[in-house]
Structures are given as C-alpha cells and as structure tokens.
Length: 266
Image (cartoon, rainbow, N blue to C red; front, side, top):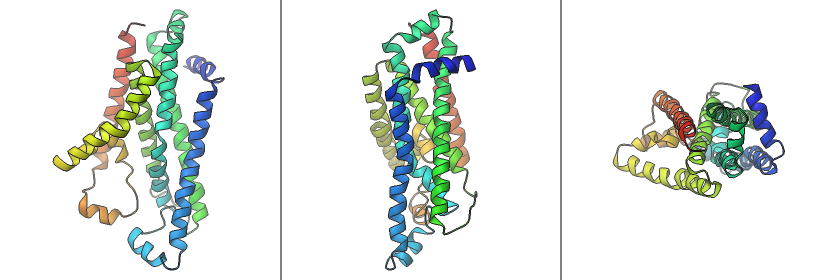
C-alpha cells in the first residue's frame, strides 16, 4: 500500500496546480471563519445589540463547545475545492494516459483506483485536521467559555461530509474522463441539481430531500444558531439515519467507481 501511495506522491509532488489549490483551500478554511468570527464579535460586543443577540442567537457561535459545530458548518461551504482536486487528479490520468502506463508497468486496475480512493480519504482527513485547529483557535480567542469537547462529534461529521464531496467528484471524474466536462457536471449537480431536487422534495414530500446523497451529509452539520426558531418550522432529522445513509452512499460511490474503472476500456 505504501508503494502505491508513493507512486501517487510522485505524480502530485511537482504538480503546482494541485498544491496551489490545496494551500488555497486550507488557508480559506481559516479565512472564512475569521471573517464570520469578526462579524459575530462585533454583534456580541455591541452594547446596543449584545442583549438582543444573546436572546435571539444564543451563546457566541465560536465559544466552546459551539465552535466545533460553527467552524464545521462554515468550512463546509469550501468543500467544492477538494472535489476539484479529485477531478483534476483522475482526469489528468486519462488525458496523459498515465493510468494505462501504470497498468502496463504492473499495477492492477483495482490497485490504481484504490489509491485514488485513498487520496480522497487523505484529503478529507487533512481538511478535518485544519477545521479542528481552526475551531480550537477561535474558541480560545473568543474566551467566553472554557475548553469543552461536548460537541466535538461535528469534526468527524465534517470528515464524512468532506469524504462524500470528494467521492462524488471522483465518481464524476471516472464517468466523464475529461476535466472540463467533469467539472461542469460536478458544479451542476452539487450547486444546482441536488439543491433544486431537495427543495422540491422538502416542500412536497415531507422534507425527504434531506436524504439525497450530499444533503444527507450536509444535514449532519446544521447551523448552530437560531436552532429553537428552526425547530418550530423544520423538524430535525434523525442523526442516526443520516449517518447510516452517509455510510451507505459512500460505499455505493466506491463500489461504482471501482466497478466502472475495472470494467471500462482503458
């Protein structure tokens, strides 16, 4: 396995676009949370708005233990970037025929595609570590409460969500093969199609839209503020059901990716 990862490392270590996007993603996690943190600090520190903010929004969203959920929620809006990295990684193999060369050199099809799946896992882990560090940092900076790991489960939920986005991107890359088409399909599905379908299902089918593939992981990390007001209008999803469905979807993604690559004409 380490030999396979070493081969993958040799492919990306000098690939500037990959590292620029990776650095941009990790920096953006801190950056977007810094912006939201400053906004909420101004609201909660304002003498005129302080009391009202506390009544409506509850505790400061970046205080412990809410920081784990808030940081994960805000950072989730950037998960399209690891998806782009996965699409670039797999479609470049088709463009430059390196997937064919690797198999000629002795790799099996299964070994080749399993390494790509492992790359998705590694990127999800790196994302989660960055979110953990960011949440910890802003929790201490906020200073309104002591360190608490009460809601720490949102960090593993973020890992599942990040892995889901990367897996969908890998699946689309394997199906489309060309980077331009794959990126277009990826954004069309993640930004438009699934959100439209979820909205329609939520409106006409008793909020069943939350069980669509990416919506399932999105609903693992709801916005932590205004929870009491939201409950009056939108019934909360069962977390156990969402977790089980997320695992099922991930297994399905990996099965289709593996099956497609193993049976396709190289």
